[in-house]
Image (tube, rainbow, N blue to C red):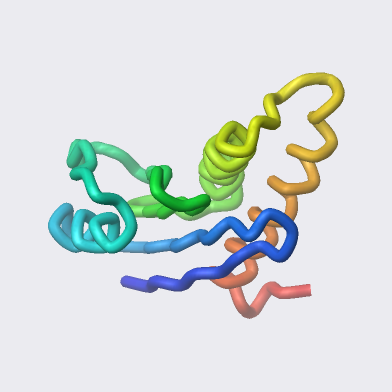
Amino acid sequence: MKKKFSFTDEVFKTGIVVMVGSYTADELDKEVKKYNSYPINNDFNYDARTIKIVEELSCIVHFKKKWDVGTIAHECFHIAHFMFDSIGIYLSDDSQETYAYYIEYLVETIYNELNPKQKE
């Protein structure tokens, strides 16, 4: 299975590109180069990976081997961390609810796209 989709959240305007399946290192690098002006570390020994796009408020997520709900939640934490760090919101007692709602939104969006039969 190979699937690619993207979405932009309406609050923070973060662009998310999700790539699922057997994309090669060259295919991933080509996608990243659309947004980043520098090469990425092409260590391809992972099940899932989130790449921060420096020039924009965006991320690319590649679920290479696993895209269960736990792995989706794990990568969504990275997306939230990269995005909030970029705009100066750091995880603390005051911001934890913002993180939690954003991660919930990301997980539901990605999970529902990957599991259309199980949408609520």
